[in-house]
Each structure stands twice: as C-alpha cells, then as structure tokens.
Length: 393
Image 1 (tube, rainbow, N blue to C red):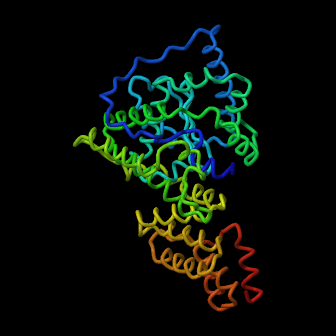
Image 2 (image 1 turned 90 degrees about the vertical axis):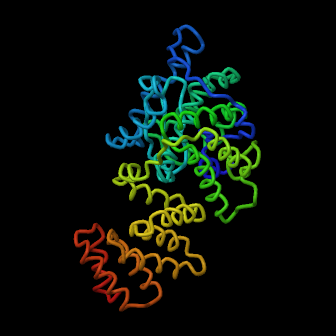
Image 3 (image 1 turned 30 degrees about the horizontal axis):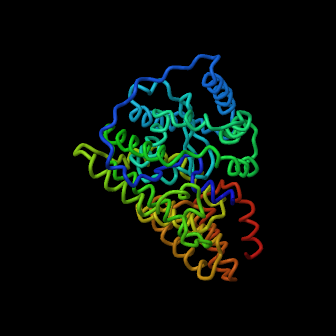
C-alpha cells in the first residue's frame, strides 16, 4: 500500500463511513459520561497505556501549541460533546495529511492537513462529530477485543500519535501497514455517522456540510494522475464500503431529515482562526508532491475566495512545481491574478522572476525581482536575489 494513498484517505479516522441505511435510525440519545475502568481490568490496562502514549504526544515536536487555535478547535469539540466535554483533550498535530482520531480515554488528535481542507467550521464539526460518535459508542474498545497483540497496538498508537522525536516518512509508512487491523467495521462507521450528524444538528451546525467533506476528498483523489476510477484502491477511507457516490447521497438524505432552521456554517470564524497558520499549512501541502490532489484543493479554495491573493499565489506555485506542459502559463496567470489582490504576498514577484529567468526573459525577470525586494527588503533570500540582479539575471 502506498503511504501517501493511505494517509490522504485518512486511514485512522474512517470519516463518514458507509451508511446506506442511515435514515432508518431513530433519534439518538446521548449516553452518560464514561467512567474510568478499574486498573486491574483489561480495559483499565488499555487506558493506562493510552495515558502513556498521550504523555508522549504532549511532548511531540509535531504538536501545534498555539493556544488560540487549540482553544478554538476544543470549543467546537465541546459544543458537540456536551456533558462529555470535561473528559476530552484535543491535540493538533502538524502534518499535511487528512486525519482525525479519538481514543477510548478521551484523547483526540486533529491533523493540520484536515484543518486546511475544511471550508468552514461546520465541516470540521462533521469530522469531529464522527470521531466523538466512535468514542461515545465505545467502538474502539469493541474493536480492540479482537486484537490479540497488545504490544502491536501500543506500537500502532506510538506511530499514530507522532511521538516526540519521531521522524516523518518512516513512522507514517509503518502506520499504513498496521492500521488495517484496527479499522472500524461497517456497522461502527454507520453508527458513528449517524451520531455525528445528530451532534452537528443539536449543536446548531448545518448537517449537509458533512456530505460536502466527502465530495471534496473524492474530488482530490480523482484529480491525481494515477486515478483509475476506483476510490477504494487509492484510499482506505473509500475501501470496503459501498460506492462513494452512494455514501454521499445517504449523507445528503439523512441531513435533510434532521436539519433545522437554526443552523450555521461558521465560515468567517473558521477563516479567522486558521488565518495565522494558513501560509505554513499551504507550504506543507506543496511538500506532499501530490500535484493533482494539491491543485484540486487549491483550485477549490480559490473558487471559494476569488480575491485572496495568497491563495492565487499558492495555486501558481502548484503549477510551477508540477511543470507539466502548459503549467508555466497557468502559473504565470495565477501569479498575475495574485498581484492584483490587496493581500498579494511579495513572493509572487520572486516566483514570476524565476519563471521569466527560466525562459530567458531577462528584462521581465529583473523587474520582477526588483519588485520583490522593494516589497520585502528584509527577505531571507534577499542577498541571493541581489546576486541574480547583479549578474544580469
């Protein structure tokens, strides 16, 4: 299994799993708060192990420690979880892949690749609600009763939680190999979807946003060059379930049944919360080197915010780095659009200069580099750009 295929599909979170008969479920009742099991029991031993892994996670180099963002995501989780809020701890992990998960002891992790892909607060609530659904229904404990090797599970958790000092590619590849035996069963996914939608509606979010999350992920996967028409072959998220279109339709139908007049998406609040981190997350996405998926994501983001110069710049970067036939002009078009926007980053002119330099357009390259230095004279690469200019580009 390809590491990036697995992770792009959120192998751990099982988001929005198969639910063709979702509408048949009656209204769901919130269970009472879960009690910590006795230490001497198998479940108590599991919790103790989870506590140790959580301690490692708190020391992780990949943990996003910005208090404002952590508080914001935690408030959404608490809004969904209600009385269970005191038992939950949310950790944001810096990695460009789409994933969220929640352990039986209340430890939830949210990866930044997921945050970048959400268009609004309601979409994030859809993912968190699904994971909280697994937690409330105790699906992890049910699944772990079938696992024979507790040491294997401990290894899995240590990888998944990006323990302190862990490297990048190797642990993620190992995670892809081990996660399969911990995947939720189809009935668990159905129940978590149902609970998640109920939690969204009760919290005042628009449940239809859950189906949009699914559609967006599928759109990214289809955009990749090696797309074969089978989503299940590209991602564990889509594997071993009914067709993606069928699942999406089931979400739409169920959302229509439980929607109420008092709902919101929280788009403005979400953009404000993620704003200080977005540049770094967009850079992380480019480093994935999955140009088809990245372009699909950036194109969607530009469509949602057509006057955002920063997004147009990163769209141009995605084209420039892919460097396929016609991409140079597409990149240049994106840069020129970015330059016309109020929040155009200085890096637009540097990238334009690089494109012109590659094609021998010296005058245009020199003007672009000069503009870059004028806008950002203290840039870290200012000395290098000065060398370009002194050398006649």
